[in-house]
Image 1 (cartoon, one colour):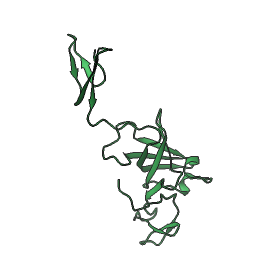
Image 2 (tube, rainbow, N blue to C red; image 1 turned 90 degrees about the vertical axis):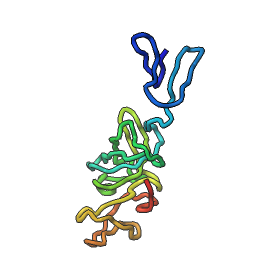
Image 3 (cartoon, one colour; image 1 turned 45 degrees about the horizontal axis):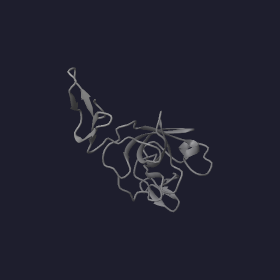
Image 4 (cartoon, rainbow, N blue to C red; image 1 turned 120 degrees about the vertical axis):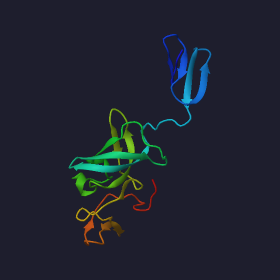
Amino acid sequence: MAGEGTYEDKDGRVYSSAGGRLEVDESEKVVKVVPDNPPIVLVEDDTVVANVTDVKPAMVICMIVSQEGKRRAVSSENLAAVHVSKIASSYVEDAGDLIRPGDLIRGKVIQALPSVQLTTSGPHLGVLRALCTSCREPLNMKGEKLYCERCERTETRKMADDYRDFEI
């Protein structure tokens, strides 16, 4: 019988639908193909990098760029949300106070189905790169705040411990 990574034609012949390693289960009479390079499907506790696309007072919406440590694109849902209560360990009244559209964030998956939910609470989680809300220049860390060299603005974000010193 056809198993995962295979299909059966109308004459009962089983064919591979993906490249990979053939596995035969003699007791169940099933063949399957295990892919050599399986797609990335997010599960709880995965760490991801995402671009923030929209910020509401109670929610941050972002597009997942990658699973941390993997170069391959995520094949499951790539739209994610961070609830205001999951941004930091302390109370946050408005999500826009600590995360802004255009920010690149690192988050941990706390729910994968039916929708991806992230948290940025924790020292290694949060904003990895931010742009000035006025001139869109990259912000540099200056103490506990972010500073724009071009327009001399100071901004606040929930920064990851390796802000501007990371690799995707």
